[in-house]
Image (tube, rainbow, N blue to C red; front, side, top):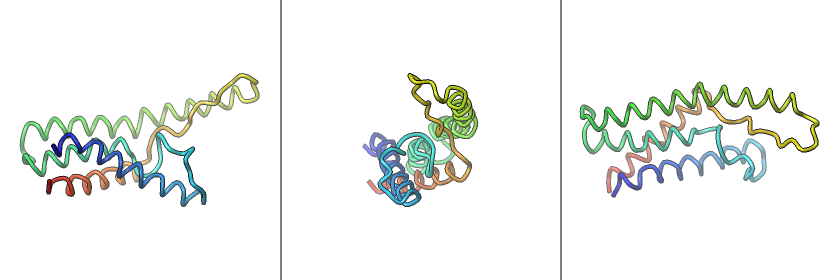
Length: 134
C-alpha cells in the first residue's frame, strides 16, 4: 500500500511546504502561486518519494529501483531544462503581446533551479523514510 500512497505523500508534503515558502516570501497567503516552479520542486518530490521508497524496501541494486531512478532522472532533467525554457518563451510572448486587450498572459514560472530540485529530492527522501515504516 505504501507504493500507492508514495506519489500522493510526496505531492502533499512538497505542495504544503511550497505554499508555506511562497506565503512567507510574499508575506501573504500565496494561493495564486500554487503550481509549477518554486521551492521545493513538487514533480521531483513525487518521483523521488517513490524511487527512494523502492530503494529502501526492495534494495538499491534491483531492476525496479533502476527503472524508478531512470524515470526520476527524466523528470529532473525536464524540470531543469525544458520547462525552464518554456517559461522563458512564455515571458517573451507575454512581453510581445502586452497591451493586447484579449490576451491572457501565459504562466512564466514553469521550471526549477537546481536548489529547488534538490529541495524536492530531500522532501521525497523524507516522505519515503516515513512511508518505509508502513
